[in-house]
Length: 496
Image 1 (tube, rainbow, N blue to C red):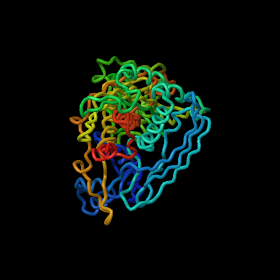
Image 2: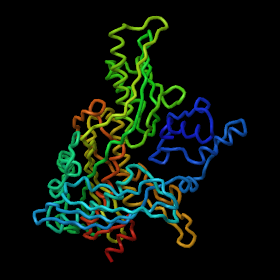
Image 3: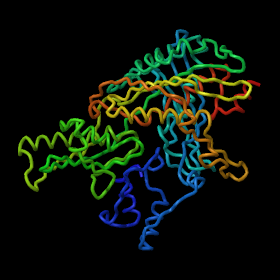
Image 4: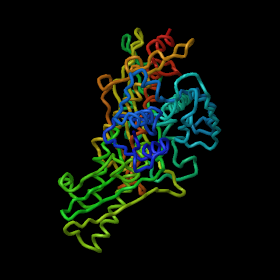
């Protein structure tokens, strides 16, 4: 599970058990990506069977069963109209969108991303629809990657129609205030675009005339896209105990879904308590992933572990230092305990992270094969608390987006409605071996509302990557492909 506290509550409620009779333990889970935000029916089935059998029960699915038992990203159809002046200034954006939710609705079905542009007139209507396919719900960056693919493909077309550089078009029209009204807590989007373009060598790699770069059967092109992602709300808690040996025991209800949550909590605690980094292992004991030993946490969803649980650690550390100043260090078996329950709100301001991604592709026009040859990702996630794992998050998110752009697809038999490509091999999920080298740039802004200036990080990493690759393909071959994934048959089809 991505949230031990919520899973604990749901299991106790659904099995009609007192909360103290339910214990959820999950430290290293691996990838969740939104699928494990809540308990599924089969979680309850395992618990019910274990209760009846009086012994542990394990349910294990085939990969195909796993693909269809949980949920994927909702597909969309997007129809846009745009008003723009001759100088490139956006005046209006209209969207009519439809989201396929499957046989019942678990997610919002939203189509987001327009807020990345400063535009005085926006008309947006989105309609979730029921289908006879697998259920759709939240998946890394819900609402955004498929939406930004449509929006940023369109904005590229607008820039080319005006004979403008897509980078300059975005710099001219990028958001300065949320919905043109609400100030951001911090914004580094312009620096993301400028620094990303410089590192990518945009002027050198981009073709002013799409399809203009020819080398035998190979065409090269460059594309970019930008995006933003909000910082989700929710309550988290932290408890810090200090014993007479000078060891801090930090209790947090986090689970590691590949983000090194335990390490990040230790770093934040050390910074807050004045523990040198070379003494963290000796002085900081992080107790995590166990509902019997940890306080409530909002869970590892919405990219809020660092910003919310980390903020609770900071507040608990402040209280503990106050107690030390008043009472002194604990002696013998005494323990000092500090608790923080936080649900930060920011009246009158919007808290977003910002990203700009740049991709170069090589397209074989005889075979339809697309290869990403260079990739640069520039991110404003506030102050980066754990640079090593943060960089891995960006590379992982960009790789997921490249796979979504070029390979991944869940196909269905039209007659029976049965999935044909469920599983890693059928859906063609990218691996690290398939991924290009990804250069990561940090544009660190100082955000006053996060722990030591940190902002949301994990989910913005995928948001512009699909569109950046799609725009690079257009720049290479001069033909726009409007549906995903951009496979060989589609490339050859538009070139025929």
